Length: 270
Length: 312
Ligand SMILES: [Zn+2]
Image (cartoon, rainbow over all chains, first blue to last red; front, side):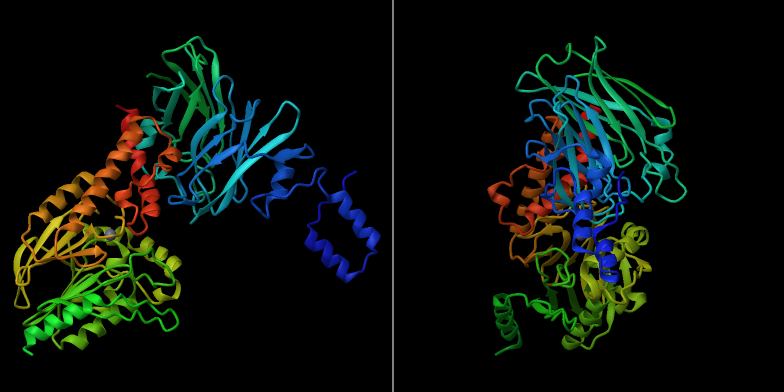
């Protein structure tokens, strides 16, 4: 049976009020300690909560091969550019991205079926926060990388620009995209989808966001699968890289839907 | 020594003095008006970001003393700045304020308006609209950045619109150009008597230009207009006064590089994080705040460039 999760501070206060035996405290501490204690290189006071939330009792290591690239300071907290790249890990198919201090911490997940395990996107930051990517390896271990981004805030509780203008309603879920050849013989795909991506945290505006997105080649084979959550920026834009031969060549098919069931269905061409 | 020679000597001396640092303890900006021509004065701010250390005094303001009154060009970043600017003007002349101009709607150029007679406040119609719509947000942001230096600062919207063209104000022959590009409306003041151009934020000198409301093609066109003016000296919005067109050339070169870098990046399919890793060319490496301003400019300008590349 698990003991209730009292923060250390309240344990100390309890100890002060009614002195418990040293053995008691030690016992409590031992039960509370994570199975593989590790020190968060970003020094975030929220790390322990993040760990419980995303990984439970599974083993976790910090690994610099999980690269999260972002500006140190976010000029526009509604559109903070981030690139996650786990391709230095041999096996990295499934990636989750989260921001410790956002009111909604989970940003997105992606499965790089045949694409490189990397993704460029933009997110909303409510305040300065670590932004982290975690990759589940086939050995059952989570590998985590991240970076602190300083933000002036307001990103998640401000209404999207789209919510206040009727324009998006006519263009909802429209996709613009393009494919480039990469020097390595692979391809780069960039796409942008018209959507307000409302978090539900701005007064009077219900949650409304794309929650499913897949990219397939013209033979129907899925190369990338993305599950965006509320913190992904308005009119989401994605950068995806395909290794040589990952797609059957030519155009790519984008499909998906938002949480209201509106469908996304478009082709991206070179 | 004749008054003219004296003025010249003072001017030469003033050019040698570094800008005095602000002292946060007493909230005194230590504004020191510098005469750059007969009746023409400037107050040169630091080439920094807004901060509690500088109280927001990162901007140039100026005033021209005409036979019948004073023309003020921009009122600074706070009520305190406006009050201290007004007090400073009174040490130079006892003539009344005839006209108080806001060259554009950025907060460091109009948040001192409170200190000046309300019926002298003037700007272009677009600038007035900009102050009306964005002034409060700017002011809140300035409180956050500059702290108690901002105490009591409120947005005051100019009530009079300023027409373009030649005119005489307080007995002084002036010309106003309505240009744009740094923002939707950038006012340039030309003092023909002295050959002085107050270029506002269309021109930066040894300090990287800022682009939160920029339209670079319009900005470059405005620089062409400025370069064609026969003048003795140029007062940039940020940076030192110059006796030649170097600041115009530098601002143009930086903006051309910035626009070209952003367009090429979008056309090559770069992600914004890759765009941000662009090295700053040696020609601009010494501009104050160039790394920060480049990062901000990518945030401001890249989304439209990449959208153009995707919707080609
Ligand atoms: Zn400006």
